[in-house]
Amino acid sequence: MNDVRQRYQLPDNTYGSIRTMSLYLTGFFLSLVISIVFIVIYAEKIVVYIPFSAEKKFIKPYETALRRWYRGKSYPEVDAYLQALANEMNTPLGLEAHYDINVHYVDSFEVNAFATLGGHIFVYRGLMELMPDENSLAMVLAYEIAHIQHRDPATAMGRWGALQLLYGFLSHRYTGKDNLGSLGGEIGMSFFSREQEKNADLAALDGLHQYYGHVSGYNTFFLQMLSGHDKQVDIPQWLSTHPDLQARIDYLQDRVDENRLPIRQTRPIPKNIINRIKSPIETQ
Image (cartoon, rainbow, N blue to C red; front, side, top):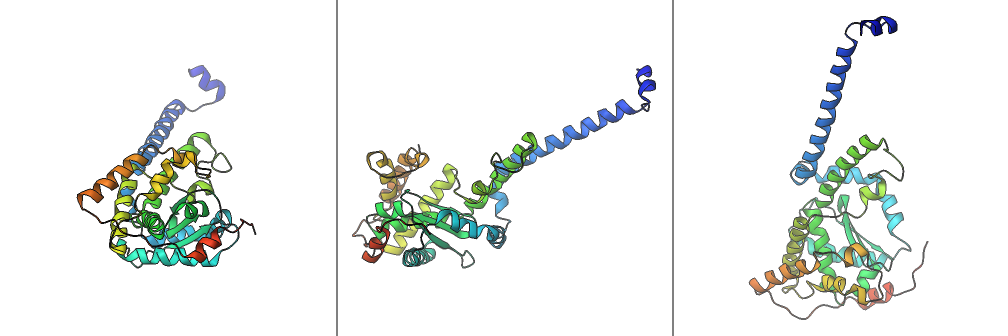
């Protein structure tokens, strides 16, 4: 070993320095992994310390891209109707004033709706066409509002960002299409835990009851999803085959039965809105 040091003119403490550096790197990596695991597990508790205003500031630069990606031709009257209905649902849901909800209509046959960061909700034409009444549509909106109220998109984003960091560290890919934290993944549709889904479902049911005085339409969306394979509709595979759909119908039904929540006549969706969304799809 002395010959090696002499040949390459290495100082006496070279191997000790390498061992020290290795220990530091190992410690750093373990700390990174532990931090990521902590964020993934406790994201719901961490996010409550991040004000909603910060979430809105984060999403602000992406808002133009969001609208461009998810919207075709503009339908102001449909946007206005959905926004007004969402505004009406805010009070029975107990949504605080600083939660700024913005609803956007997406002129696509896909049967879908989702909430993302900064209080944005996107409702697809395909979903609206399947809703037989306003009550069923209000239940969907209330569910998405409840996700925002519970800060579920921010929680999902925190977990996604932590996993992105680990992925980038291991793969050395921090940009481009292979990056798990690409823009579409960050601000698009989020996947929530079963507990988050259940909390949003039950909050939406309570909000529906308070607003209309009954809960008609509370399970329409889930029933439509279960029967999606029998219909000529563009239902996303992850949604139409979701293993929790029947469970969600069951616990909502249990809540209805336990509290003897009434079922009454539903309110129709305005005819001008129905006619507008049934017009041919166009792109700008």
